[in-house]
Length: 88
Image 1 (tube, rainbow, N blue to C red):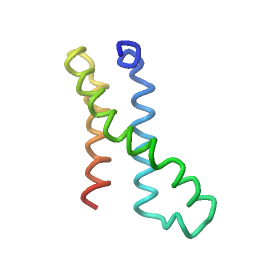
Image 2 (cartoon, rainbow, N blue to C red):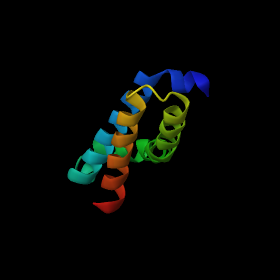
Image 3 (cartoon, rainbow, N blue to C red):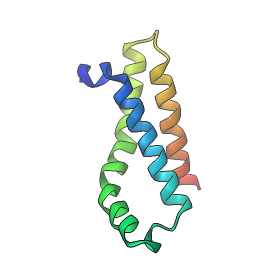
Image 4 (cartoon, helix red, strand yellow):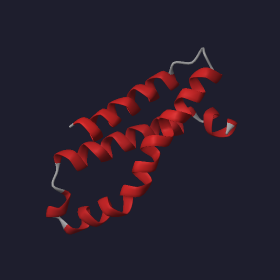
């Protein structure tokens, strides 16, 4: 668990990828193009699991490292993504 928390750039990259994935799925009709529909269906389960796992990891990182701003930024990205997925 400590190695995952220590790699803050990886968590930041995953948070941004999840945000982009859900934005594209909400704005573009992915089933209009066959390849996009297949990729969307394949990536759906990992993205939904990371959608709920990353905020937990970011919250743990905030409590573990109180002097770093990256976990706060990651948590903000995750909360925006959750807002997009469930409220839009």
